[in-house]
Image (tube, rainbow, N blue to C red; front, side, top):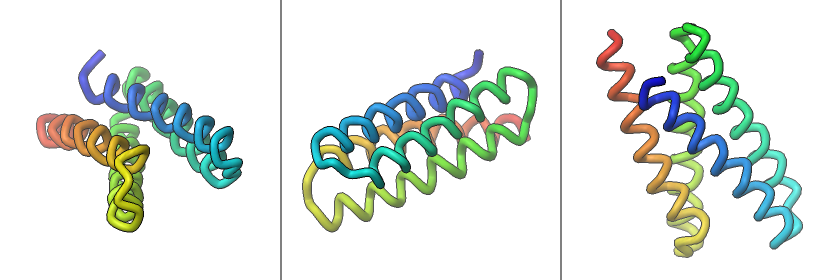
Length: 106
């Protein structure tokens, strides 16, 4: 299992957990829905990478990039580290690993 698969799994699980926490703390159905959808897409992309599907790494990279941009904008707007700052930093770390894997593969 390579590092991009681990990064996709870790960030996917964090997105799911964050969506659930957002729902229970703020009763935000949008947080729940977006966290579950993006998290499950990342987990699916990790699974497909394990199955040898090269395009799944591109899918995981794109989803992670979208989440990083979203959380960075949210951080700039609210100036609150939790959860936007944490998810931005962890997303940038996961994105770095995934992009490095993309560059290495090609």
